[in-house]
Length: 206
Image (cartoon, rainbow, N blue to C red):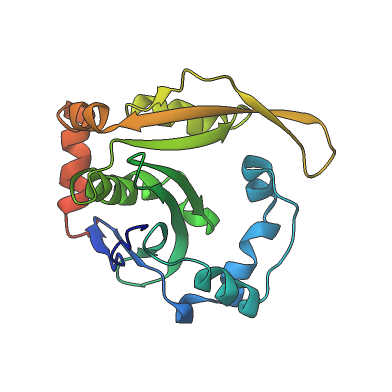
């Protein structure tokens, strides 16, 4: 019999941001516009489109918050919804696949993903006893790739994969990265990891 894992109703303060489980009422027209952003189309290789509020609500409903988690990234103070994390968890293999989107351009390159990602990844490693987090990044997205490697992510030993571009059909290379529980703990003990922890634990004021 397949075990039924408990729902993850999560909330994490993360410096100037906070991260929490997405609710159906978080569906918005603004969220629906994110995939029409040329930057998003480029880094995610998606066909440009605008989703309706109902389509977003249907997307939220597809997550059981047990093995498929959807968490929203919000700015403290304004409570503006700026992005989200998706985790697809394989409890038997003790691993998860992570995807992150910062939909609001004013919050890109602001540290939003790392400040919000560290607390939830720590939760997955400690509370859920996972052993590795997997990620895939398009080779052309060099900024994200370089930053993840700086944080302690490692290149997966497996081969890269290719996929057709959603805009012109050319072949795109996708690289795979992994962050093991041991590598995560080692990174958090570094000066950079300790500095990020202090930022996460701050009250978010500037």
